[in-house]
Length: 279
Image 1 (cartoon, rainbow, N blue to C red):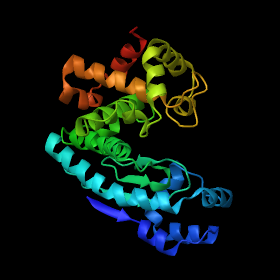
Image 2 (image 1 turned 180 degrees about the vertical axis):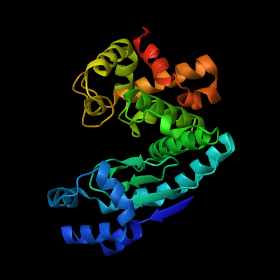
Image 3 (image 1 turned 30 degrees about the horizontal axis):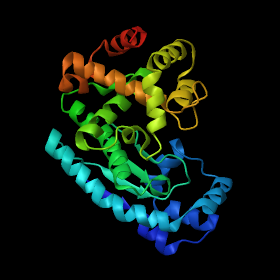
């Protein structure tokens, strides 16, 4: 695991201007290429909005806490699942887009955008464990000689499965957190989780209807993006459904087969049957 820590340069050189931000992005082009391609707009308007919102004190606080959390979480995955992480872990100050993400790679690098993270230790443990869970899922699957070209990456049921797996891994690596923190990565998720639990039948039904009638982009926005949630008034409910789906796989076939279930030729058919079945 290699840490690419851009925060010292940002803090040392910071000037509240778009020119500074562009120079910062140019210093780490490979890191920000992925970020601006999929997770945040790169416009002067966005830069000015970000400058108005940055809290250097909060970024400094998160930076001081997240590095030991990353090292601790990686060690826990090594102990529980006997994996190592041959990846880059990038620490950046972004433009208030995604808070953290895995790169679009088979064994994915991970980026954390510190301006979007809560400095609470449990919150950092949850989000770090979630992103490392995605990487762990790929590493374990890769070791079973999965044929990656067969994966239906564009299918929303694959996204449900991936998010459910990452949530499962995060609970295994950091098992003592408040249940809602595994979904919200802060202390504001209790109401969201209570709603999801109380309305899981309707949530699953509505997702199934969208799956049958909407585009993948529309499904991503409504069910997986922080900007979605028009249907029920809560965004990212796909993460809860994903956890339901993955836990159903664990109960049916055991943890290890569940982790590699996406290598099955009938995986999407299997997921569709689960989605269409009542609770």
